[in-house]
Length: 256
Image (cartoon, rainbow, N blue to C red):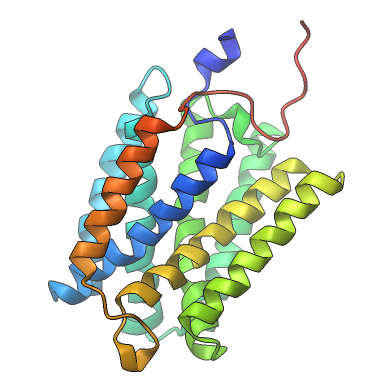
């Protein structure tokens, strides 16, 4: 392992990374809905719970001296559950609507990435090894998770394609991003963030498809049970799949 690998605080972007990320975003949807709907605590209380957990985990992640797989993925899950409840609170409780919420969150995402680029000269995740860059990274992650929730709800409800249809649309969009990665010279950094954002609405629509009532186009599965199964699957994959800090898309080759 190189010195750069040791200093890196986020995992290498591999196929395993994307599999766990999609499962984590699906868990974010079912887990968030479990607290706000099944337990009937509401969107505001749910947001307070998950946002508090997220802040604690981000502080722990920044304080960590090296990449720790379970801490990293716990923080990702906290960001996606907080994103679910925050988006639902803004879209439904505040009455902004899915289109309005998606537009505002997209503007916020662009603003955070622009500030990150202005401060560091890059938004590549291979630079996530200082507290300031980590703060930008987790801000972008959390906003992308919230944006993805709003986009997923907009596609499923306002666009009228349903949860299964929305999952197919976002899955196809991810396939396009993958094709661009393998067969074009488009910036790997931009493709990473495009894929990262798109995995969230994919997870949101899959999660809604699993737990929404039959008359709303879902399978009406138990939210707590679906969340538990997803959590166990994530833990198993973190244990079974290689979890290492490493080079990321956009990093220049190092001299031998």
